[in-house]
Structure formats: structure tokens, C-alpha cells
Length: 107
Image (cartoon, rainbow, N blue to C red):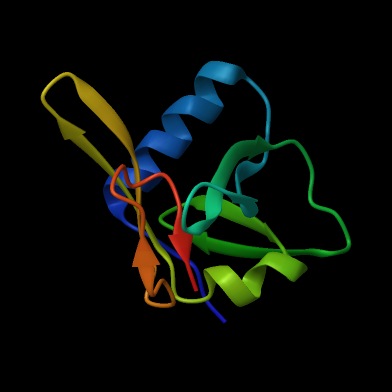
């Protein structure tokens, strides 16, 4: 199982952790939501729990609850700017569909 991070995403994660002054990495999860079934949940991890899996690339950690790995295995996290908007983007090979607004996905 793997979650990967692009250099752009790693730079943004490191920048945000430095601005916050605390945290061990980015926490990625899923929750049931939207018209397609699941939505990504992104936060900053304050600690690593026993039921977490940690992926480290480009000097940053991504922390995922083990129960969410079935939905997130193979996900690539990127960070992109489009005009005035900037956000994390997710490329998920397990996603079989996504809603029109891009807020949710199905597996």
C-alpha cells in the first residue's frame, strides 16, 4: 500500500507546518459524503497514533488511518495553482467515478 506526494505538495505541506509551528505531517482520510460516495479529508496531524500508517517522501509525512487505506492505496497528492485558486489535488487509481464538482468520488 502506498500514498505518494509530489514535490509541489511536499513543499506546501512543509510550508504550512512551518507557519503553524507544530504538527508532524499531513493527515489524509476519507468520509462518506457527496453524490459519489466519499470525500477526501485533509488536516494536519499533531501526532501519529497506533492505528496510523505513515508515508514519507520529499521530507514530509502523510499520516493515514489504517482503515482508510482501502480507499487511498495508490493516491498521489499534488498541489496546484489555477489562477487565483490553489489546492491539494488527488489522483486516485481506485476511484471509479467522481461528481461533477470534484468534491466526492466512488470506489
